[in-house]
Length: 559
Image (cartoon, rainbow, N blue to C red):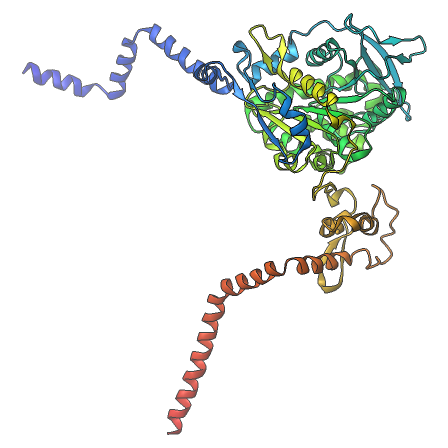
């Protein structure tokens, strides 16, 4: 009877009540430990911490991956002698996360003391750019006179630093770089973007990710002022995008010996998509937007007159700011048009000087998806170095986080390059089929034209897409003939009928392709026959079967 009553009591208790009683019986300290472990696992994954990976590797770090052309003289004569680029990178143990590193470099950074002397550079449009020359005790050759002119040893190498978005000479990573270069007896100058470094906007022109005119004028000015000094340029983040775009635009005409692009976004359109993908990327997006709005507030008197100021104040992302300010100032149709036009990945093929590119695969701002690996491999002047970790620009190493890996790598690359025969080599365009950057037709002429044989083509640069890969002997002639909009705003009168000689090259290029690829065309025809034969064969079988049946029935009727 007792057993039966006990069974009846158990049956009367619901499963949820039993579960609740069991949960109450667990000590509360066990719950705290469980919550603590879940939080640790969540933060480990959310912050992309890699301390366990470093521990399993014996704290040896991850190897640096180099991408280059097998025939590259830059690799064989320079990079092959760089010990750092052939080694490993191990981040500071207590900064074993790209997010911790990126936050540390921007808010603390352990920057060394750097003393600057300022020179103001006035552009042709009336803009003012601050050039900050490193004036540390280690550098005794630099002298700035009262007339704002700089005198130095004409033959001493000169390093030009282009900072990133909303960064200037006072940024921690810029100070790490400037101090390291100056300590090794290099003359160093930081070219601040317009409106940064404590300088007011004095014209209606602002800087952007694709604005290369300021860098071009400053480099030409320094080259004219110090004609015998070897010039080296380093760009970081947005500054790296501007640098690579400038090198691709000017090709062999750049007066520099070598360059380095660190943590470049490469393609702002891809980075924009990436910045809206995850929660932590949205945090970076909002933080960058706050920095841009602070920059805009400093120059409200000018920017409020030229842009959508109400939209600027309400911007919650970089894209919002670019839509209300950068796109309007640059006279772009859409934000995506601006991003496509300023993407330095489109200009990689035309770089004609030794260029070292450094990117981190865990960069939380500039995604590794945008890195143009194949384009870098095709250009014999470029060596791409990618690391597993590093974040966006920090690359701290050592227990005290006072050393930056990429700063040491760039310094070694420039030192070896300066002493190599490549520093005296005549610049040559790389042997690649994509030297001319492809531009979207929306930027120039959203018109179409129907040519003979019913081919529909865009009136603009896309007409030339079919003939960009002609022989080099006819390349200049082809471009002069078929780029009917040589400038951004052409003087074409679209009310007049277009001359077919400007659109005929499409047919001409197709004819040339067919002559050079006869086997491919025969193969294409064979594939077309094989793939359509089941349908055609079935139709023919039905047709002949009906016809045969009709004739057979007619013959039977006559009998």
